[in-house]
Image (cartoon, rainbow, N blue to C red; front, side, top):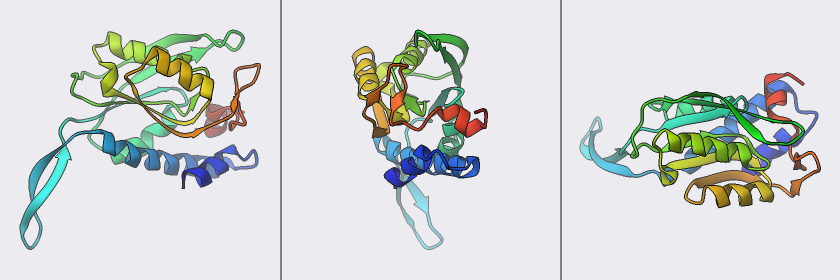
Length: 200
């Protein structure tokens, strides 16, 4: 399923409608995959016929998309984690130097027990994701409570990110070949935000 959806996202001829549908579907796939990372507590549940055992999350999630591309993952993750609180981190990357810069930060109240899912569709150099983790840590988060969710990543980006944020969990649908001279992921899928929001 992941490979099929990534193929749709890669295709330069994919329409904006198909692109958004594939994004939503892949987001749900990764949300389901992330579920296994988070602790559950036992509970009783009454069916129409009897009482039985079930489970529920011990602590509510915090969803934090990195603006603007991360907004595309917010809807599928909110559907899966419907009680989650939501924060936003705005980071822009200098097109010449590829150095990330923080321009917006609005986080909900959380404790070190709340799992935090950091949403960013692409990990190119790893700089933006590393900066976002730094922002979360400055707000009181521990690396081990953070999970970075991404569609596409470069090996260089993963190496840099794991060096900077060694205890952060990482869920990536596809690791690509590498980066070109402009620090773009190859083969990649182009500019995710432009294609999703129709600003090409």
